[in-house]
Amino acid sequence: MKTCTAFPLLLITFNVSIERNSWDFSGLLKVAASEEGFCSSPYSVVNSDTDSNTLYWKVTNPTLSPPYLREKSRSGLPPFDVERFIFVVQGAVTVTNASGASDKLIVDSYAYLPPSFQHSVNCDASATLVVFERRYASLENYVAEPIISSTEKQPLLETPGEVFQLRKLLPTSLAYDFNIHIMDFQPGEFLNVKEFHYNQHGLLLLEGQGIYRLGDNWYPIQAGDVIWMAPFVPQWYAALGKTRSRYLLYKDVNRNPV
Image (cartoon, rainbow, N blue to C red; front, side, top):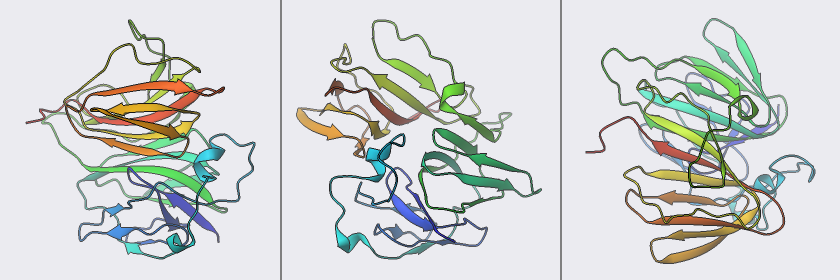
């Protein structure tokens, strides 16, 4: 079997199946495994032989692909109290639960898997995934349920005073302690205000290019770049170039930040 590519807030590469006992990582990115089973990488670079006509192809075909990233690592699955979100950027994977029921995820589709939810993820050809993991902050009388869906199934939401298009991939109910937003900007569109939030954010630019302000610094970014934003850091974005900008944004919600 071939390999899948994934990243928890960043990009890592793992072997075809995520089993209950371990992940077997291989290929193109150097990753670090903690004692608790979390994986991380300081890089936002991957290599792939995907067709340049596929959606989000820039994410899997970046400008740079250093050969020294072709290393291996191994990590166990997250602890029982860690939740997982999977978003398919390239290829397809199958998510199977403990009872044997399975769902195929293709590009632009996703799965939310609550803590302690037994499952496996498999692919028959190489695939690139976004993987977010975090320790679940439970609330009494609220239970998060597994979700399988896709971006196109989520409605466009109102954004008063703004021009970008917004979709939220997870419910906004108190059972969920984070959300994933898909935000679209046409060339020349920008955030109308400089924002800062109590939330921390993790951002992956899926399409296009632009300029991102963090604090007093300005960063040109392009598809495949990853940004982490600490709480209360001023932020602003403008889309440049000739094509749509789309980014995937993680934010923690519904919990007291203190």
